[in-house]
Image (cartoon, rainbow, N blue to C red; front, side):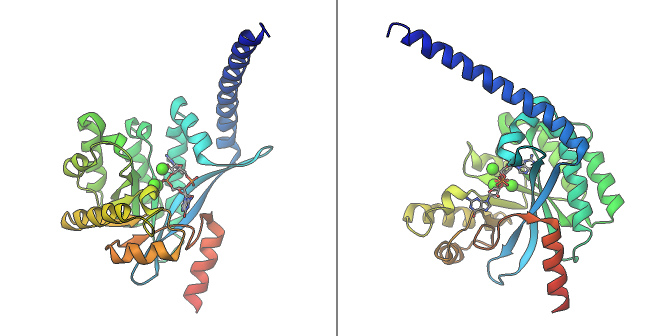
Length: 275
Ligand code: C2E
Ligand code: CA
Ligand code: CA
Ligand code: CA
């Protein structure tokens, strides 16, 4: 029994050690994965709430690991950010997504997630410009999703960078809205094209008046500022009807589709073109 305390401590040390080891393994694997083409973009539709039509897709990273199977971004994106691997990874994402959207009809756009570390890379703007030129995709068909953390601490250089990107004609969306701090101040410091209302408010919009009130306030605010609103994580038709009532413009979630491989999108696009 007297070994108990020590036993716990060494167990703790061991699991710490394993966690560090895990991250090292993920980092090494991820470097190889980039070279071996094990990364793939999946696409989830964004739907116009009134017409029920798909207006574009959000690109979401997946890692088809040769031994471990499918790995989700929540596992490897944080490691990629810490190690700086997110920079080459993110450049690959921009190029692949634009290459893909070039195959779709003109009215469909693609949304790409940008992480804070990527914004410190001097390659970001040239990558976007070159990929647009190489694919011939009109800039307004590309939307970049950023989170509030990018604008934290009055980050003037990021604000300038976003203005520069926007001046290319590329659209900017504020992702996970409502989960960070001082959200309203960010709406003043940068003119977003779109606000994506986080899933945590959408979850209970069909059962809780307070969630409904928040969504109503955000959609009202967004429309006064000339911004589009997208509700994330819509899973039930009851949520959909409430979101419609509260003035939300676009929806995204499992109710319509989860993220699917590019070939599935190409199939759907071809089907709707011939029918
Ligand atoms: P996010 O940008 O907020 O993306 C939305 C996440 O919610 C996606 O998870 C999506 O599959 C999931 N989702 C969509 N509809 C529903 C729904 O109805 N219910 C539920 N429960 N979930 C839904 P995913 O694909 O696992 O991505 C997680 C996060 O990883 C993303 O959150 C984003 O922050 C990050 N991420 C994904 N791809 C990239 C990328 O290419 N670059 C960067 N920097 N981050 C990425
Ligand atoms: Ca996103
Ligand atoms: Ca989000
Ligand atoms: Ca997120």
